[in-house]
Image 1 (spheres, rainbow, N blue to C red):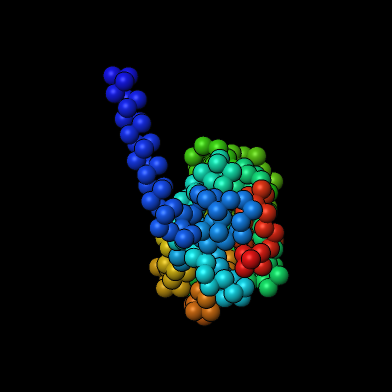
Image 2: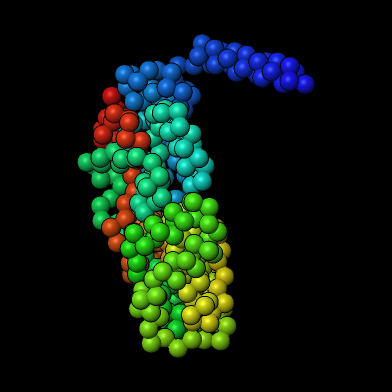
Length: 305
Ligand code: PBE
């Protein structure tokens, strides 16, 4: 039994070695994180000219296309994936100390789990002072003034969101992480709910995308609105386009995940007359290209080398 296992392992080992040799012989650069080019090779060769992206609807994917144009990186590819797949790929690369470039943003737990840095962006392809806004459907103010008032009041910080994100990343359920946050911050919850008369089970629906930051904000707001204000909250996890469209079409009441002015500029210009912008729920947020700090590159300009 033991012997059989060993020989199976050996066989697989040989197969993958053969695959590597074949790949090495016939490809001139591919292989996202193999570092076959050696650590003194240009960063583009080290990572096979690949940037690990997230879901195609995310604004950061459009900003990355813009960076490719702005910095003349036409030989680079942005790999579509998802928030979860991107962080899994990053984790794997870091365990092997392989070079890797991902699309990243703050707030995000990955900055507390790993030693990472943003590549400088002198051409500002990723914008400047970015904020996360709450948007609501037209008419929410009149139909559900209590919900409207709470959403107007809800503003938090990167550190606060970080507590929730990190707890989820460490294995807590989304609900438990939100409940713990609420218990730990009674004064904040009171500020946001102050003077609002609780309702009797009014339904309210949010759209959000499965980005780690937005999973955190939705769960905290859901739980405060249900436990302190008597709402019945529904959350629709959708693609970025549908997140905006649902609110613009009046199918859903609000979203906490509008990154402005740059990241969701296209969605904003398309839907601005059909939604109400309730203002920032968080300021000082950021998007860009992110690498482990052991990667030599310091600026997006270095990717042209
Ligand atoms: N993000 C996180 C989103 C907004 C929230 C930066 C990945 C994006 O649209 O790119």
